[in-house]
Length: 201
Image (cartoon, rainbow, N blue to C red; front, side, top):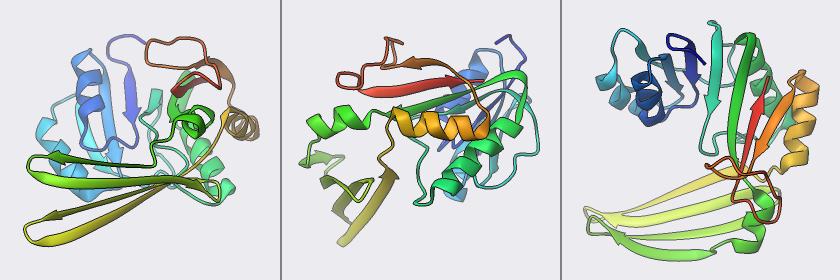
């Protein structure tokens, strides 16, 4: 990538990766389904950093030199065709010779190292987290009490392995050029790598 190139960070959450990429000289758009996250991210906007509400299942109308899909932000949907459709949206939004980065968890490593339950206190609030792999999903249940009210959140993401994503890429006419196993970009090992990071063109 060269300075001034256009990057899409999707989904961007509250924009931390978008802000960093923009600080490196890139023209960045951050997009996310959550209106609250985009509202929080908009405080960082400038001439070359913009944030929008966008659903990954919808067509992307601009073209980018690169699209970043970071920190396990793929595989939200039960139906494979929906997840493949998201990859098609990404592919159609890439400029010629553009590339897509998917940063996903390594489910094979996680199966051997899953922490099923943990409790901790953060900012005076006691959190309890339970995890399980069931019916092809990684499921995380988060519960805590704040201001006298009990809160419970359920996160579910498809337990995709490398072969699953390779198959999806083939169906989308995306070419996988690199597969890394961590943020130091070490070679991927399905038993030892904590992450599954793919570069697709």
